[in-house]
Image (tube, rainbow, N blue to C red; front, side, top):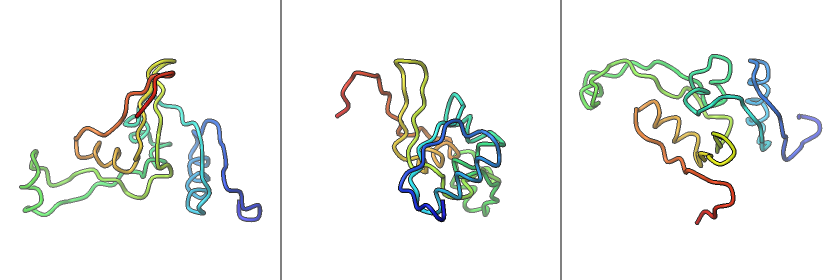
Length: 130
């Protein structure tokens, strides 16, 4: 990546910790990365020990008493995204005719950790999106 200066790299099936780290390095160098990552849903990838870092990883954060009081669940220790995700967008394929598009992975991951719905779009092949 350093010496060839590609604009885009396409990778099939990122799954090992070494491949995840290579993908993070590629993304940090400003190269657009298009890749497949095996998993059924975005939350499954987030919670996967090997592939979770693609979505920004996870860190346990201790909130102040005042911050915890503002939360609906009043918890002081919460999970948060640890860093920037490797991908800006994600597409979940739930079969040939049901796809969920996450236009902003960072917002989707943050919403997941907050227990809120994300702005994923249900797509069907052959159907126009406005």
